[in-house]
Length: 127
Image 1: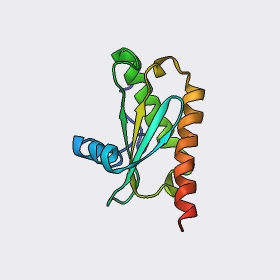
Image 2 (image 1 turned 90 degrees about the vertical axis):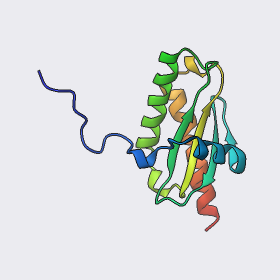
Image 3 (image 1 turned 180 degrees about the horizontal axis):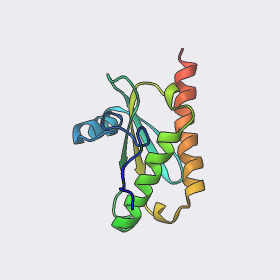
């Protein structure tokens, strides 16, 4: 049997994810918002080299197993987002709305991709 090792470059690195409470709070308090039916994007410029992602989900989204599954899916959507390199240097927090637990992957992918795409368009229009 083979070991369960990660293939290189297949996950978001630590520097591509928001991990500290202060970063999340900055996005909530000083950032702007984009609203969708299953999630709200909070975003704020950062001093890093690229966009960073954070995800929040309250217990209203679903039980722990459901919340973790949706978070994994959102990280995967962000990782595979075709215009990720065009995203401006900013911290992005995806805040899941209550009841998102029953959302299928295609719906989630379409919505998150649309919200992220609006950030790319917003950045392109400012240039």
